[in-house]
Length: 73
Image (tube, rainbow, N blue to C red; front, side):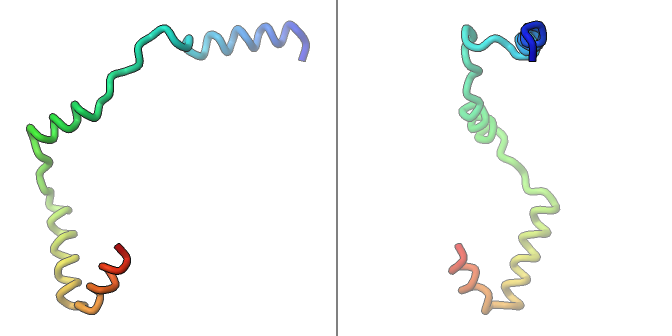
């Protein structure tokens, strides 16, 4: 790679990447997410209820799976 290619590559990289530093980091989104979940809890959808009922029915049909499930946790 000759000097002209290095200069061209350097210009391309400087144009593609934002300058580092100087800007404040973005604010943390986790506290805002927690406040939003406290205001409006996520509702249970039909898929959630179907999965929970299938899991409950499976445990009623195969109660011997309960110790295995508890052991795996």
